Structures are given as C-alpha cells and as structure tokens.
Length: 362
Image (cartoon, rainbow, N blue to C red; front, side, top):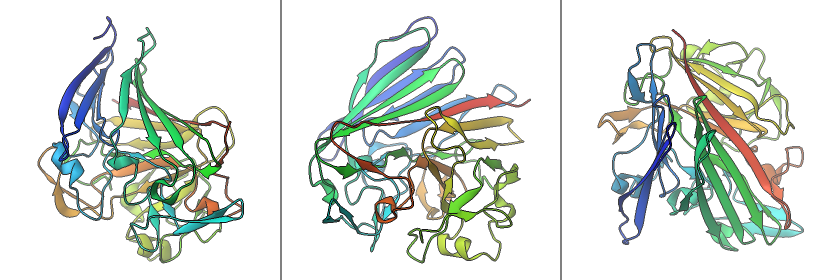
C-alpha cells in the first residue's frame, strides 16, 4: 500500500524453527530511500541509499535468511536488532527499592543486551500506522513479563519506525511498566556507507558530539568515571578517520579490542533530538547524521566480527566492516548513582527518539 510519495509493503519473511511466522516490512520514500526490517528482533535488514553517482546500495550489515538470525553464534552480532530490556552491560545484578535482582548472564559476569533471550530474539507484533503526507510508519510492540531475564515488572514496549522525504529514518521508543524497573532501549544497526560487504570503515570520517566518555574495567563495565576525551584516542570532536587511533597504545582500546565504549552526548537533557554523530564516506559521498534524545551512545567497531559470519551479500564480515551507533543510557547505570537514571516507575513513560538522516556530498 502507499500514496504518491510513500510505499509500505508487508510480506511473510519466513518461519522460525518453532513455526512462528516472521514478517518483513519495507518503507520507501519519494527519493527511493528504502528501509527493510523484520519482526524477528525488529531487526533492520537493509537501508538502501544512493551514492554521489546515484547508485543505491545497502549500508547496513545483516544476514540474508531468517535461519541465520535465529542461529547466529555465541558472540552474537545483534545485526540491526532492537535491544532490551537493558541495552549494553549490567554487572550481573542491581538493587532497586532495597531488593537485589540477579540477571541472566550471557557474557559472564555480565548481562549483555537484555540477557540470554533479549528483545533481539523475540518476535514483535507489527502494525502499519495510518499514512500521512509527512511520513510512513510501522509500530512494533512487545510484552515482556515480570521476571523476564531477571528484570522486575510487566513491561509494555512500542517502537515506531518512520521514514520521511527528508531522508530521515526515526526510531521512536516507548515503554511502560506496572512495577518499578530499569529500562534501556536501543537499536544495534551496523553502518558501512561504502555499502555492506565493501570492506573496512576505518577510512570513514567520524565526528562525535561528545566531550566525555565512560571508561571501562577489564569486564567492559564502566568504572563510574566520566572522563574527558581530550588528548586520547576517544576524541572525535573534530571529524577524524575512524582508523586513525584505533591501534594506539591506549588501555581502553586494549580492553575492548577496538572501540566499544559509551560516549556522553553533549547537551543532555534536552527534549529535542540533538546531534550525536556524523559519519562520512569520502569515496561514495554518502553521509549519515545521527540525532538522539538519549544521554549516551555506545560506538562499536564490530570487534567480535572475525570472518566467520557471511552477511547479506554473501561476503564474510570482519572487524571494522561496520560501525554500530547505539544511542542509549549509560551501561551499568543501575549500579552507578552518578549516571543518568534508568529507573522507570508505574505511570511513567520511557519516551526516546533516535534519527538517522542520510544525504550525499557531491
């Protein structure tokens, strides 16, 4: 279905090993920008954008079959997936209202990206929203039961994916609970503006609107320090090639085997989405501007990609063949009183947005 400006299509993508139907949705605007995603994990499988010669390519990493999404190996890449209940890492447990909650450990001693069966492994309900002249949208919904992966409260989650004619793709996250809990939602898409499967992103230019970051310990858990990026390889306040400092002799890069850190996005709190990142590939001319209402953003250079996964194009993915931007609250926030709070109470609404804006620099 669609109008003169937008197209939204729905089809059966496949069935899971247990026989559940997974759907695929396609959003397309008047400029032929196209976003595809599936109801398995809400995973974004393709974003087609033009280069400076008008040639369209998919700029996100992902698999070509549902079976691959279901059966990816232990070091899960989370390609394009919605992440919850808690994006990033919690150090195994946390206290809330005087009670300790032990979480499902899938990166011992951590609970990573929601635990053993996070939102990336769930089938979301999907509904095409009434179309307007402004944008085309699909709402994804999920119910997470009290005790899911150790988290308290029945959590109701909604994520609206929207595409407009300014070539902006918006992810609008909302969640409500019936019991005090902690929530941290994000999307885990990996970007390669040269096109998926077309080599390293080390030559992409990256600017981060962040003057601080949160250093981590040997288990990749924040130490609690909010450290300045100045005079470190973490300083991307000026547009810099991603690979310029990635091999520097720097303790934080050794711990993560590259970049896998939370940057503190300047200007929080602000109800409006503010600039978080600008990514530019000089060869193709493709540019991504990322905006978010969230306080932080994990930046990850795919350090666990070792060539053992074949992606959408059939090519093997290796480290630095995509960069993941994960706007979110800080990792392990429930255990750090000095971090922005991720506590959500009944009658409150978790309500955050992230926007990708694609353009071409001739």
